[in-house]
Length: 145
Ligand code: DHK
Image (cartoon, rainbow, N blue to C red; front, side, top):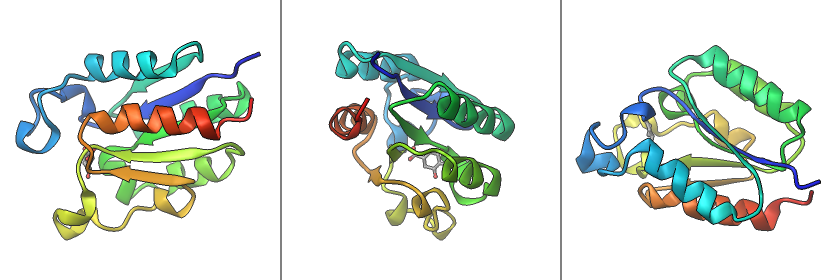
């Protein structure tokens, strides 16, 4: 059985393509999803976005129970504030790649301290929407099952 890669996206990422294109580009979330599925090849991808913290927590629990081969997560603004997401990710036994379209360390200070980085296997930030493709490719190498 080839366990799926979960690609989880947080608040406002449903607006990609229209949202601050000078920072996030013109690629839509649907185009990002297609990019992830192409990169994953035969490995199944569960791709979701929500503006609700509790849904991300529930999806991380789902990834634990599936089990997922790995989680690529862009928690967006929740990256810097959410203890529930951090606590949920601490329970996930497989690789976690934290993904940001922008280089959060070159932005305003509010974006500099990621809670998710405390449990992430790796962090990709600043490669634009293409970062998702790189994250999935990296996860294919990290995934064991
Ligand atoms: C996306 C967001 O929505 C911001 O809140 C983060 C992240 C940056 C990104 O670059 O993908 O700070």
